Amino acid sequence: MTDYVTDVGLLRLADGSLYTQASYSLRYSRESGRPSSPNQKDERTETEKDRGRIGYSHFLRRLSGVTQVVSPEPSAPIRHSRESHSHKVALVAREIAEHLTRLAASDRETAEIIAAVGGLDISACQAAGLAHDLGHPPFGHAGEVAMNSRLINFHSTNPGMENCADGFEGNAQSFRIVTKLDRRMPFDHQGGPAPRGLDLTFVTLAAILKYPTLRPPNETGDKPPKFGAFETERSTFDAARAGAASALRPGQQTLEASAMDLADDITYAIHDLEDFYRADLIDFGRVADYLRSAPEELRSAEEKEIPNPFVEEARKLASEPETRFDMATYQTALVSTQSIVGQVFSKRFSGSAAEMALLRWTLSGLVSTLFSGIHLTRPSANAEPLVSLRASEWHLMQCLKLITRAFVVKGSRMGLIERAQTEVIGKLFDSLATWLTSSPKKSSLPQPLRDYILEVEREARRSQRDPDQFSSAHLRAIADYICGLSDAEALSRANWLAGRDVPGMSLLPSDT
Image (cartoon, rainbow, N blue to C red; front, side, top):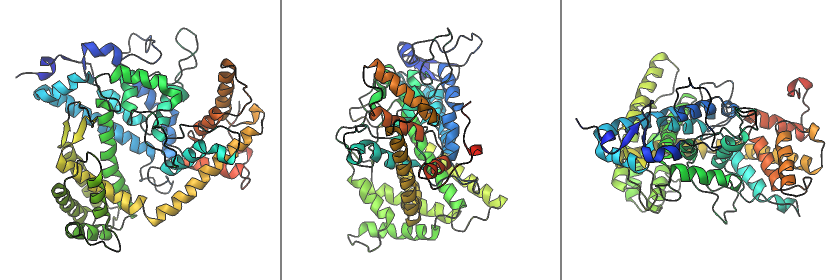
């Protein structure tokens, strides 16, 4: 039997990843240009080392206290935090990559596509899944909107001050964390200054870039556009793209990034739905009613007084440029979704072992159904995802994702919660900015904000600028500090700085 992997010129790494000889040195180079480790007994692949560096990051551990869809609560440990979501995305991304590398051996087209982009690295997919949400601020998207608004509009409430033109975006902050803020060692192997960031390979850095662009110009609304890196990380962004994405169009995800992105969608569609069923936060009777009436409403031009979210979603998807939407396939997906809701979510979850086993078995089957539709697309001029689902599975996933989005995220209860969360992050940002503009003693600032500000001042001196002049770099340092906090820490610090609460000494970290 022909092995198409070797037939098209692909080679295998020890973990089963595929690469071409011509692409190896670029994809597996590190940002610092230095060897990854002096330990000759370390037989891990370069990206397995990357996975370890991200897996042990304190920024990843922080996500256990950060909002996924709702804020983590000690009384509801069964609900996903952003950390548990990240671990599941990493697992699913790895399984997608393993599936494709196995398929390449028996399917020539799959092997040819992998060879055309330089390979498919399994551990880079897993590492990207762990890293993709590192930059999400406290309270998730509500915090993201609040910080973006403060950064791009700072001068409106502080005349004469600079804005931070890039604003804020969680994906770009993730890239900033792994390339600049996190540190894996205090100095290098020769005793010199340590490389900034985690010093990841270019293939892993490119895999983290779910949105492989800088911020689009002239985007000034409070809700940030999706992009992958701030201007401050442009050189690393360019190097990672040149090293791992040279065969792709500008703005097109690498194969590894595309696998991670699909894993993120599958995890959101399945596991978040599980959370809200178990927590009894979705009225699945209403969901079933909307699903039953959607096909007829889609055939009618009549506008309902209370819009059907499944009808609204169909019209939105159909209006998007270069859409994959097909009405007949969507109608079939509605029927499938209605069947799933009727079989699994028709009664309230009691927590019994039998119900838990049924839920787990059914959701596992759903994941398998979606996996059956995974396929690769050859690189093309329109920069579409390289890893995607076939039409029937893609439409089913849209329906499943919509349940959480329409019945939880956009619900009235969530609206009130997000309003409060936005206020907390906005007030915390304002309080920290006011503190910094008052020229405080550096020793009075909390860590790691103190270190971030000292680095801003060192950079100002290197550039022959006044280190005491408040600048956009100070605003970025505030955002970096806030992005190191959990939801609960952000709330407590906002209350402290607003004078609504006074911490005891036991609540504050030691400076020693």
